[in-house]
Length: 138
Image (cartoon, rainbow, N blue to C red; front, side, top):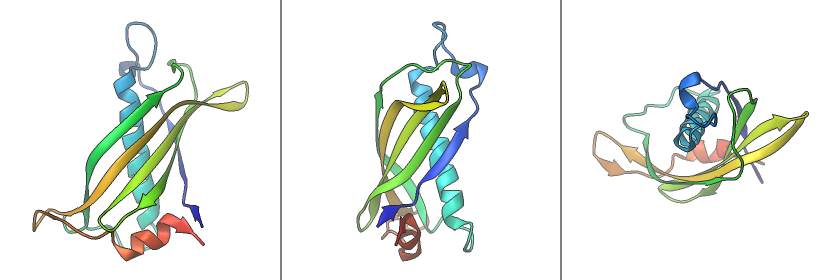
């Protein structure tokens, strides 16, 4: 089984760049968030829309390793996939790359622990089976 991977191109905004001319380190986490949202959009595209109130998610933990700086002129992509599926949570991994001379160079990598959550009952819930089925290729 291989994970379903989603690749998202990121548009770097002027506000993403700090005084030193680099994309601010906190912005990498926002790029990962954008990629996670894109991942969920692709997960639900073939089925009914996700009911985020009854089958929502909560970000429980995020870790980011910074490897190289990103500049405003760089072309950046984030690849996102589920690297672990538990009973009520799953891990999403990301690889942030910039294109240098036609080659993708990893500039950061991250891991987010996502807990499935019902906002009506205010409780964690099992990972929906139909999500699990789409998170991996057979």
